[in-house]
Image 1: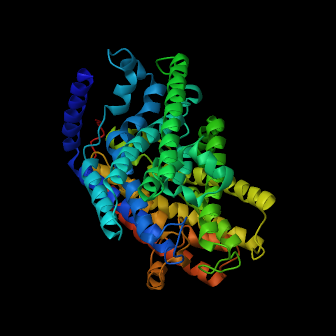
Image 2: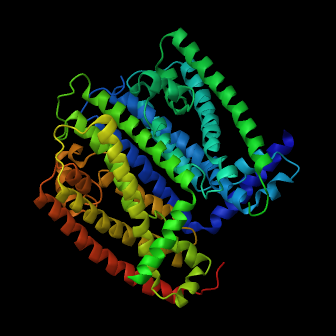
Image 3: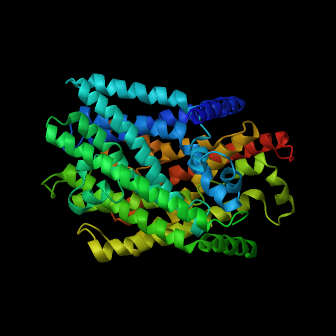
Length: 265
Length: 267
């Protein structure tokens, strides 16, 4: 464990050194992410010009949902996005060999090696939006709700990683340049909308088979849940889905590695 | 024309090389888009499905929300032109011996991708018509389809010019992909790909008239739906052409200035 912590500190140092080499890109990325935040907020502001409630949420509640999504996205962009983006390239070019022979977990190395140091400023920006949305909400939350919300957001980050990787792993078989990335970006929009917007089997599908409905919606639902039974149900559901997805992901990853034919596969 | 055909065929072969991914991505995003727009607008319209929001009924809004993202994808064509990569690794050199200019080559690639996405868009529209049914207000007219296709070619070329400027920044900076993403976010919001422009506040409507984005998604989708008069559509096309001329001039200036800095060595 200590060895991995030291290794991660090395990743951090190297990532910062690399980010400072591309100083102009540093500022471009900050502007890009802030425009992304603005676009998402404007989207819901316009929707609320035409309706007082959306999925049972008022505008202030929705802003907490949007801010939660933006904060989670900033965590993804900072710690995971670059690494997952490069994975299909490594698989197709055979560069995965270099990671498989190292004396550390290949998944740890491949998933966390590159930290987008310039996105850390965006993370601060997204966190500020989150604080702003909480301040605008005219009711207060208990400490229990806040702690569970933070834990659920972190669990959501882990779940996002698992789902995202499940869309990349098919590259081992298809050898296409980006796996099912396009499909992922198409369907991941469900994560950007509150789960109560959907109904029936479709809602069940989004909370079990492709659990985009859990990643941001469940932490926010947890925040607004007054009923202890509902809170318990949300917790058990989220933990169960995360465990099942972890097992499936590990199995698919090992299967993919068996199919990996090394250089220029 | 012969060269156009050769590049077109080569690019089509590249697109169809990964047929499985091509269709899985298409069906996944199409169904996803349909589900998303249905539930979002069901919630907004509530129990009153006969209401009119932003000048559209519930059925028309679903059709618009289904077509708009696909139209955006169509006009974005190639999405990334990889000009920055060619600058970065010295790849521009090889185009010296090509029988057509660098921008002609890239433009043909762009249009080929636009046409392949257009095929997907019409497949999606056919699916919508067969399994969901067209809204009663939908007016089919062959002239509208012709206008739609013309509109997409102009919009795709305009996107190509805008994207080229973003990527040519690589003559001065090393890593510029974030500028392309930035452009995409702006287009997504201001072209009506996420939300119909008629839903935006009244004060912003005048602004859309002068911006190049309205003609990229809002106008083609509305003309395809038979929900826009030809005068308004023509105005948006003229505005796009004016912007295309201006942006092409900037593209040329940036290209010439950038060429003076290009070493061709690669990093």
